[in-house]
Image (cartoon, rainbow, N blue to C red; front, top):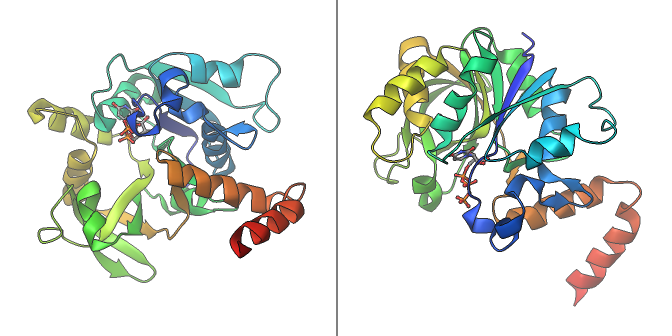
Length: 266
Ligand code: UTP
């Protein structure tokens, strides 16, 4: 099924990318000459999205896309946004988009998960959507499990049948080593699940509790992604993204390869 609307939460504080984020929203930090979030938008559009809904703390990210001449390849995209006044967590950010999304299924892409050039992950996820939630899953090392939402899943062919999820478990209590990594295709019923989970939340409103509830009631499909997504919310992930994009760019790659070889030889 094609998914025509994409929600991109981008209202986080970006504390791990200070000092850059003292003055620049994290998603506008560039990878070469393009802000990181533009690659994410292009990924969404490549997977079929015609409308992009940003969840923002202010309008600077929106202005990148809407002010001045249209960006090549994004001329026909409808850009919309909603302000998240306070960074109350990812679940809250997604819920902020409810009125714009309405009763449509939607792709959700975290702005700080960067697609490797040529990744077809989101397009595969949109194709797999048949009314049940689709989740990108990455195998993570045991000691990193407490940093993630982790799913309970059984293999079915080259995919996973997901029956639940738990936020930041200990390695001992984790149902698997498969982590939620920032690409989702949600049915609109996720909004009610988030609102329900939010009612009981004391701190940040996470999306994992809502995913858990929806997976338990309706089931969900997991699609493995290995190295499809880099973490540009961290300095080393930004370095990886820069290298990956430079090596994929015919105008830059030849000289850049020579430079890398010289650096690695030292
Ligand atoms: P992170 O958990 O990486 O948080 O958010 P962060 O604030 O961006 O960065 P740190 O931890 O302070 O360094 C994951 C994604 O969810 C969005 C962020 O913008 C990022 O794309 N998010 C998070 C929101 O939009 N609102 C929130 O309340 C929390």
